[in-house]
Length: 449
Ligand code: HEM
Image (cartoon, rainbow, N blue to C red; front, top):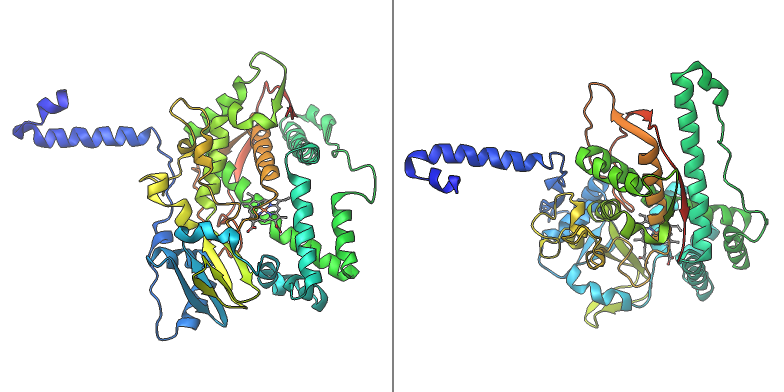
């Protein structure tokens, strides 16, 4: 009301100043909101005179974000570019619904292409992953099925979640013991106390990796071939979860208000009890903001390329020709930054977009995420990944206080521009001053359903 009165001609400058102050105050309610680097959406100048080399140079410099920017630079639903000698077909969101039905394509040959040189794959492993014959394709299908069966919610997943929790607890105990030792001489006697490793699988030879090894051996893998396959699993599966959990911690540390609210969620649970049991199957309901922050990390930094190698000539949506030996890639940026889906602030890191007005988790918004794949078979490790991230965040933020080193402000790392595979990685590490949080209660992770 008073603003309307002030908006009389003579008071206009004063009104504008007041408005500016109000905007500044409003901004301060979320001072640390983090925005995507506008360069990620900049149109790409195509070097028409040397197209193949041009794309190759840009790809070498900007990694997968180069293809994302190419897609954002055109309204074409699908188009092909030569990157060096490789033909790459880029597919936009409007054709995504046809991707699960795409025939004669494979994930392993794409993975082989990404890692063959850096991991030094031998001839035999390369042939298996290239999937040129029925037997090697069968290996891919069987391994994929084994992963899906092993990591769906149930007894086995629970076993892995407990194992990961054991490792996290063990590491945090070591950190706390070390901090106690540093702060008091008596603490020295406690050094390493409670730092036992989690229980190992008792039975030897029938673990999941043993079964995958036997599958590879049945397909003729030599000891070297099996080593290559394990390296592929480490290089292919590790970076996503490592980047995503690192971003999760960074974003929480970057925003005091978010950190406080998430701490409140954690501390309020079993407030007056010494022992709290957290049901991992109800994490989204129990810790809506923490879970929303995790999903926002996946949206915000999950801007890589979902893709397949085209084994035989094929068509997408019965219309678009994809030639044998090419690559079909669907960048996730156009999905994760589409303003019509996520709103005008799609380029801002805002976990609350995954919450309903009453602050509860909104499962409908989660369905818009494409970070676990677009081609029908989606990541079998997605449940484990979420459990790992949630367990780590709950234990970390309830056990330790982390502040920037005195005098330093927390400065959010940027995304590494040249990330080629998977989630974008931070361009540097942040060094924090870590202290123990007192009065922490004992937390156990359970799984009721
Ligand atoms: C934030 C973490 C993760 C993200 C964003 C992620 C994302 C993806 C994506 C996009 C794919 C390709 C899916 C497709 O096109 O069919 C994939 C495949 C795969 N992921 Fe994950 N992943 C994550 C964590 C994990 C973890 C922790 C595991 C461990 C079990 C895992 C196991 C796999 C496997 C085995 C495949 C290959 C599936 C197949 O061959 O059918 N992932 N992941």
